[in-house]
Image 1 (cartoon, one colour):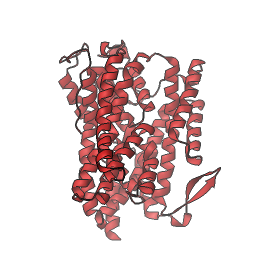
Image 2: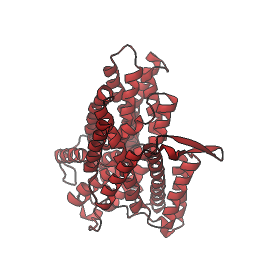
Image 3: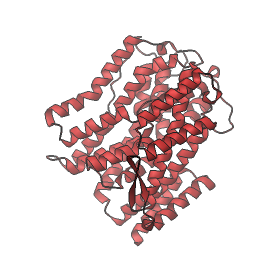
Image 4: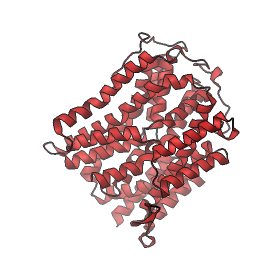
Length: 468
């Protein structure tokens, strides 16, 4: 996608900042991070931590965790927003735009190419088998994400209780995720104000276990507040207005020229709404997007959302790129007056645009003010509690994924006016169970990397598809 660089009020950006980091060097590092950003948000954040904190020592542990907790609070992919935030800290507006855009670009191109393969060759036994294997492996990857994030965020009984409450609320009561975030944040804020030790921030490190902590004072950026990071209401309003216009211009244009029932208008409006109301990244919002895309709009068939997540898991970039796959299929199947592939390509570009432009808006509108509050104990406690709640939401996704991967049929059980899906035992799909268990053993017992596991399961799935 095209990003328009907008310089802040302070004037043109020098080749290096006060920290001495050349912008060209930063661009090369962000491109390297983008190329290595596999494995979902936990893996992507670990890559950023290893390169930016441990290897380059551009920022320290405390500032990294504060930025991460803030991004966890926002709707959208926290890893991409973290890249934009740190890029802004290092090189102002231009740095944030470049870091955030580079984080998305490799995944966008990869998923676009794989989407072409899916619609042109997806009915063949070979490709069907590949996606069958990917879905089984992705189940193990999602469970691994629960364990990795949970082991960092759930440091005490209170945090574990918050995660459990979030899981029960979203699984049994279908509670909206924004409400879960709000309640967790309020509880954490109150706990921080009261000085309760359980809500103390920290310990989230995504770096190597047992490694020495790199403190802010030991880094290029230091522990002080950079001049451009000081709250500047005029700058925030200026860039927020520009990003808001870039985001909403295509949405309004489509509404006026094509009408609300046009598939491109529906794509633009739905994913714009998703950019505002969904939190926790792809793991947290997958069920919501699947429900709307399958049930409300009829863009996808049941199970195809899992295929899309399989594509996103095997390519670099945020897992929320699965939405690009949804937009691609929606336009491919429903657009009239255009070649299906042309329409699908436009649908993928439009989906990516309205999904990620708001991410830059949230970062640039709030980052200077949140950076100012980095030492605020109550705010840090609120963000820590929210991180714990997100673990429960990801666990909900893992359960949902397991039910729809290992079983071919489900039934809904009513509960206090709501309902939740349970599997039909006789619909157990034994090959999927065997492949998922094998992937879990490889990941947890032998600690094999995600990419080799995904590739192995895809090949085994392809063999299964060809055999029968």
